[in-house]
Image (tube, rainbow, N blue to C red):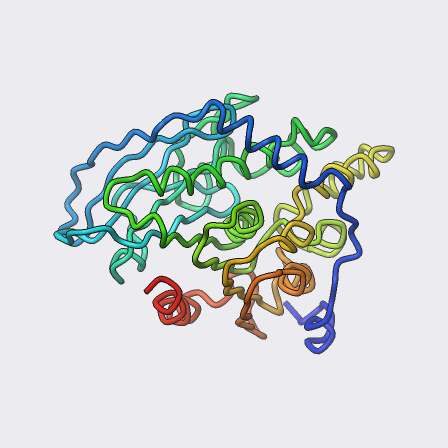
Length: 323
């Protein structure tokens, strides 16, 4: 894959041309208030695994409409006291995985809450356990980008974003968590969710968004050559008279428009050969992000981004933010 997008010096100043809806803030304030009106305390149950270094708990928490959302709560074994927690969001079609699929963060001393994607969880080797009661159970290989896309109130990502925001509420309510030291993290769709949460909350200590999805959507759906953005183009190739309605809906979920209200320190990553999340769309969100921010750039990588190299950067950066 070549470096097909803007030159790097232009990326550093690039801004989206998308226009935020006038009622963007009201839409999300109302959506979250309605969801919290039916909120219930998370249910936590210890899971027996063969792991000796990490304790695992099965968590069910209240999401959009009071729907149950599943997650894994992990923390280093035999560690007393309240720990900082990183709420982690999954990539497109992925789920929370199996209880023993432990990432690097619990090994570094952090608690984590791995959030399921409602209705996804059948791709990428990370299974899910959360249905979407508003239309379907777990699905395979996409379709979520256009589910309800003609109406912002019915759009799939309204439910997914709300789940992501309320996951932080759930994390703060868990036993053994330092509620004043919460970070969010994700890659691709998970990175887009992390940015949305950072935009819709003001109580985070840190945000890590790797090659984030759902940014600068008008450009993304015309530039990406692989991945979920192609679903929108495919839809519009058939529904040729719905372009304006689709773009109007997507504007409510575009992180490049949401992040001008974000305040938490953020660590981004971008890959300049990324065919799924074009580099300019990532920079559109980065350049609009209102809080302190840093960017890690990987010039010769596709959507895998920085991978283990980025994890090494994150360990040092996160220690500074959550100490």
